[in-house]
Image (tube, rainbow, N blue to C red; front, side, top):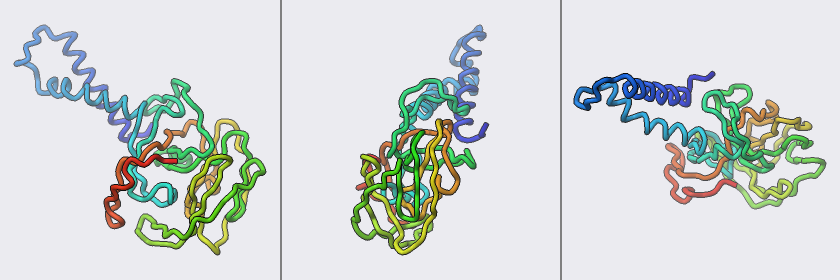
Length: 254
């Protein structure tokens, strides 16, 4: 169990709710003028904490993009909203699934707990679903024996988290019917490998293909690690970089 923000939110909601409930059940004198400060705070904060907990756990949760691994789809400084019920409802803290709602689809942009350190949230594009055979060789990518079609859009200057720049090439990629943009660094080598995705696991890659730490390096993402599907950008601000960018607000994530 991780003692993160979610844990403390659950704890605060539970404590304030218990204080309020015990007072209501056992107090013989409900004179508001004689209520303790603790009770007053508990009664005031419990509904707010409960609403935030339910919204954050089962509906939607905000995240900030800290790196350039998903360029050009997501930029450093994007604040995104993640659909928490897209892949089933899970209990907060325990992360046990309590209701099946939907399944991840190839091409989704997914937030998940990093398998090597579940305290860290990652965001990548889902390339391989259970049963898929994924093969990567330098700049090329095959799924189920089909080499993905790509067309060149033009040059793109990619910024990292330290606001360093690197020239890349922007391509339009067709992921077996899902069209999206990727970046590659020209005239550089890359990794080679292949894998058949087993049941209950997913193969993830960053859209910034040559500058992404993803399933090519550390393997598959278990279904239990899924957090949700990235939906919209609700804010963009990158201090030390491009600052505030209003044109990105409200953009859907595809």
